[in-house]
Length: 130
View 1 (cartoon, rainbow, N blue to C red):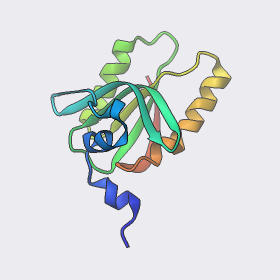
View 2 (view 1 turned 90 degrees about the horizontal axis):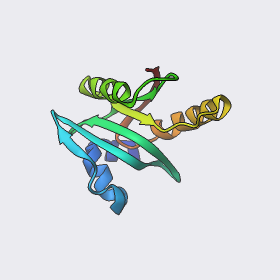
View 3 (view 1 turned 45 degrees about the vertical axis):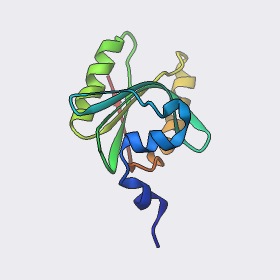
View 4 (view 1 turned 180 degrees about the vertical axis):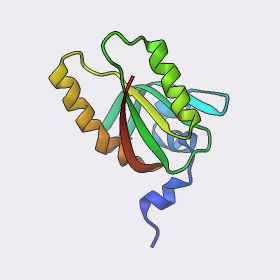
């Protein structure tokens, strides 16, 4: 039998996006071997994430790196970190997070299993503070 993960794992981020929703069909821009998208992205089931998503073009079984900015970190710093991690072969996700500390922690905890369940990922999610 072929599992959903192995069947979908061979598809690139663009392929997943093209079949996911019309809103994501024109997924971001490609530059330097990376595909970048800013906006809302369906990650699993009914979970949608608003933020920055960067992955290597044609990547398979990618580890997810969830970038969490520290207070005062500029968007430029987050974007550079996401591009660096994606350039190393990760699917970098920098979600927009609530300002309140408890809500922020809850959102991070909710996102980890949803991001790990995405078909084109390895299932591993790492949280990195930037």
